[in-house]
Length: 382
Image (cartoon, rainbow, N blue to C red; front, side, top):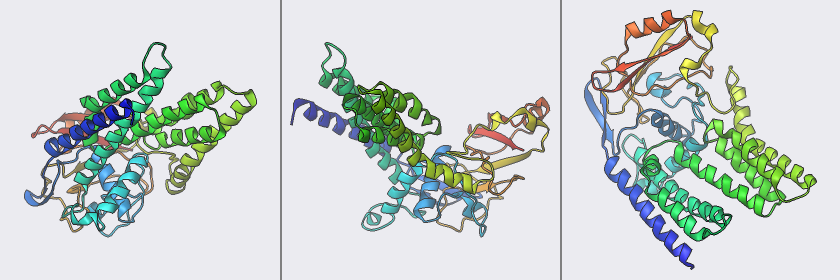
């Protein structure tokens, strides 16, 4: 084993230790689950907030065989069929669904899991593994980039890059969250490595691999579909080959990306009434002005997140209980793709809502601070 690989292994061990320590200490939990002021249980990890609720709950929904549907519907609407969900691209929830299925079945079920089958702790430690793998790929990428710079030792550049990613808090803090950043970063670095591979030795198979990875990146973050034209096609058309080969590489990139993205986009177009390709996520405040005269209703939700639910919260009668209450009042089609996830709700400012309505700017979000210091959001829907 060369000196580069020996040092890189040490860096990976340190990176893994930093991430495990962060999850074990800063995210140790437990998270109490309360209904009407009474603690009904807990799960052994820090409470999830914001988009983490969706990623974790949706992964559990898929692991339990219910597909890409609203993950908390059985809690909020007992006995009703869950509507489809595509709040975020599928990469993260699909990977975590595999993790959650494994920890709920032997042999891992003997040492993992919790009473409510939330699998939050297990998802966080899975992100630790993916974050450590990211450090490894960044090391390889740094070495490849360093070799293109005259006077720079590629091995040293790679080790420095890996060391920075291993120890930078802004990187490893994401590995303690049940979010898309870690897996998307893995796909991004993988796509860049494949771009260099195509540039170094252009072949059709490498072009296909690059296109597929660019498509995979967009399955982590929808806006990163731009990797196809801005990375895949640029590298294909600048590779050291004839124009005929370059054109073939470009077609291969596009076709491979389409093969990855098209099944998900087609699935969404089939199940939603409003045209939806990769994700339904959009800011509620970005609705067009023509909606300003529509009728708006208010949606308020209380999530577990360590916060106490209101007395009107329904009793939990399902093991899938990452949410306490989800009180909806939305006059919208069942399969509409326009949905917004709240972060931490307790109550809303009526005056702020009325002010937003009078402003005539369409659907708006009003914010203020709740009594416990939580961020309170009021969202309006046409």
